[in-house]
Length: 153
Image (cartoon, rainbow, N blue to C red; front, side):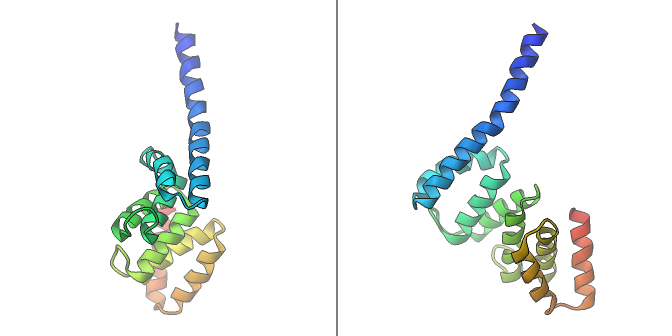
């Protein structure tokens, strides 16, 4: 009986990511077709279950008012959840929110921090924005942002 339980649990754990992937891809197809309501229907449950890609897309949709009312606080919430899981696109989006003071208090330090983290995992747009915002910061602010980035990683 224990073997059967273990096999069932293992098969369920392997099936979940495949299901997530299939549902996520249905959301991508719907989004690309401009059917934001269907995309939300696919991504929202995934996002609530912890899927970072779905969380990032919900952040993007709230950020841009696609299929939902634009809501910067909600965008920041979803970006942050995905960013904390290592999603570089969400980290980039969170950097934009801090740079522009959308849904958060404007902070070049936190914008730099998030773009630095995203840049460290290959996001080239984050490199560019990090360097631009660094030109507006003091050496002490840059040092603080770099320290915060190290703590987050």
